[in-house]
Length: 293
Image (tube, rainbow, N blue to C red; front, side):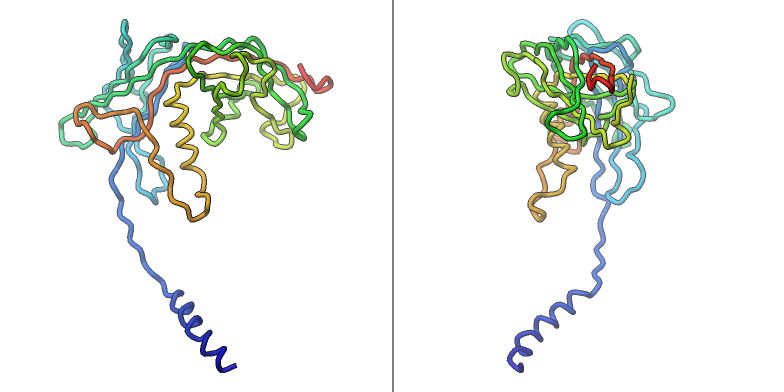
């Protein structure tokens, strides 16, 4: 017993010492410029958001940066974006502006991020891939996944060298896959000869209120064709949201941005992405009695 006490007493003392409170002071860190925006093939008001990162322990959203000059340009046109009066730091195209597959688009931003009276110039460029042709979608109770409705796609993929697709679902016009965690990206290695013949694109969980279908509900599948650079950006951003695996593993690498400061080359305080992509969608009506539309 004495020998056991001799062995365990130092350990108990060490554990007791570990209970002392340690105050750690964290600084605010360097504020980052965050830019995010995209141009699609839809005729809608496209948005570019420009904000300043908040402190690590901040409980408020990032601060939008007003007063920037923002333009989108291609080889034959330039579009000036207007700042939203209701949302400082959000810049909108006119309603009829849309992107064309096969063209490249350049985002230019001029703003005084430092507040020193001298505006910096930022730029990002994205190519808009060729678009897909989704002929139709079908809905059915899954024969594999319990209490799930499968959303199946039919059509052809474009003749891009490599296709990266994202699938988004709407129920009665409401987007169900709006968060980054729900953003699904796949490449065309899952398809044969660039054809979609009843490809499983998404699942609707019938045990969750938000995604449970009622008879007559309209389900819409939106298919976006992404550049490889943007697909990687999404995957890296999703990795940032997940816990480290193993639990004490190192943090993931910084998410890569395509926004560069052209007036100060090498500036590394920039986050976010600008991209252009074609989008296509089809709808189907859920018939509960038949299990499909």
